Amino acid sequence: MSRAFSTHRKVLAAAAVLTVTGGALTGCAASGGGDGTTEITFLTSNDAPNPETAEALAAAFEEEHPDVKVSVEIRPGGTEGDNLVKTRLSTGEMADVFYYNSGSLLQALNPDSTLVDLSDQEWVGSLTEEFTPVVSTDNGLYGAPLGASFAGGIVYNKPLYEELGLEIPQTWDEFMANNATIAAEADGVAPVIQTYGETWTSQLFVLGDFANVAAVDPEWADQYTAHQRSYAEEPALLGFQHQQEVAEAGYFNEDFPSAAFQDGARMVAEGEGAHYPMLSNVIQTILQNTPDAVDDIGFFALPAEDAANTQATIWQPNALYVPRSTEGAELEAAKELVAFANSEAGCEIQNELLPPAGPYAGTCEALDTAPPLLDDIQAYFDEGKAANALEFSSPVKGPNLEKVTVEVGSGIKTAEEAAEFYDQDVENQARQLGLEGW
Image (cartoon, rainbow, N blue to C red; front, side, top):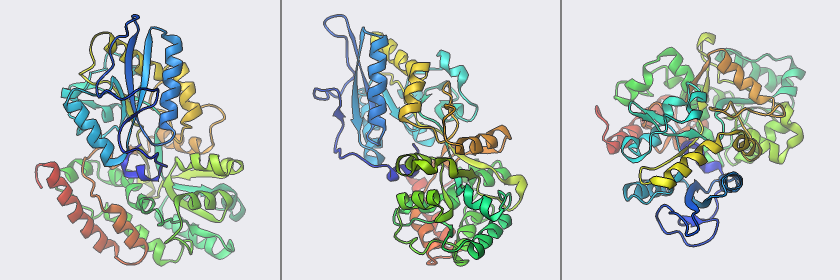
């Protein structure tokens, strides 16, 4: 999952990498066993259900490959986990297969020097055109998807829409008109749910709007990375302005300053709120907590000013990688494990333990029993109206975005003030990365 939103996952207590399958972590890739068995390691993050998924894949793989033993290791999430991955790659002590981000965080690993090029693998031909560039450089393709993509936009309550005779808005004005109808005719229902008790959830008005920015200005991401575009000017400024407009209209739930992510999921599921600007993988929380409401949940893209520019913003899945430090029989076994994860048996495990909240990026396909919300998202792909989130096109993201979007939604900063502050935040981060033009 994108690190921008990783904090909403329940994190297991882990101060260091631990071995799941027993034994102390040696800090290096496994080698052959004395009985002729090839032993490899598989490193995953501690975000649930990643450990369970890794264990299930390892066990099923061993059944098909009795000459290979897979030991699953767990690392922390967030910055601590990023630093651990970089350290182990730089010292040649990385696990034989590891699970990590795609997009800009992958590029920070210098994959041409640290990872095995997997472009000759059979599963590569199944990758979507949206996923391929986020695990590639000009010199190779390095990752296989694990899990499905997900979208950022508006998760909404379909029975409320049917009851009020509302249509899916194609423009921002239509969206605000729907909010006005809900406020006037649906007693006790919040038109727009916000959950600032977990500040990361406040970012969707801005981050979920990026596909619309790209539709207006296809070169925006590249020019932003080169310090030639900013959030203080349109079209990127509109995300902040839209958040301010909804807040000033009084459309938020009354408890928005303290409500948490799970509260928002419950509210939209039970019809206490009509719209929740959120990632589509909220459907996994709804499946767990209010399963009877799954069929009542729909999705639409954050509407742009002009309907022609309304697109769904997509977050691509994380991926499996093999480090260059893995060689010989271990390298072959590692490649086989990556391929297995994208085989029919591996896809069954993914569907069971990583319920898709968007289209798969490779060989796997969602089951017929998948939530209807997936059909809504797939329609944007089918119509050519989907684009990757900014973090898959640019390494630049300031650490304080969630702080300033909370301030906009809370009336502390105007959209223009927040955008200017965020541009300064971004500038500091870009300089730390050593990007040209900053």
